[in-house]
Image (cartoon, rainbow, N blue to C red; front, side, top):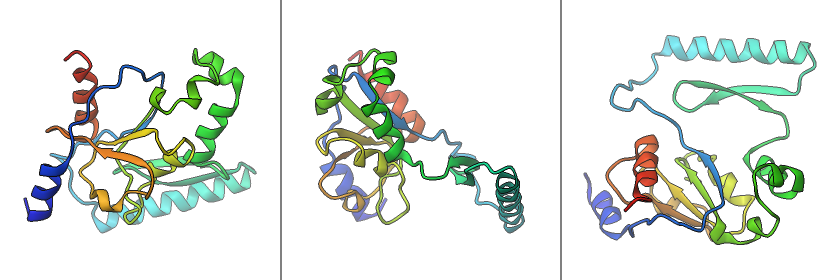
Length: 181
């Protein structure tokens, strides 16, 4: 652990369970970090070939879908023109969707009733979870379950680091269990 990590650990406020939450927007990747090894060049080449073939097939079928690498070992199929911001905004602005979730428009106007759970908020390292923040009021708390540098978080948003021992999906589980404390 270097001095920056010690500094971050000493200044990270404890994140407590929010009993008021009615809507959670989440993208926390499951990881096998203990077993993870970097992809071999041949694996990267195979994945790149697979993605290229997928693009061709989707284009030939006239489907507006873009395949891309996601997570550590995943391929995401994204609808062209739709990202985390547009998807969340769609849900928040459609009363029928809100109603199907047991929510009202008033629920999604109150920042204390919403929370974002993610693990990639860095603006310097390709963190896409920060785009969920862009769809919600800046006061909505976003919990980052990955050990990232808060200096790299989007400015003006309420992004906090998970403050306990576990991280990524295990940190999220730890947070869920904290509601009983």
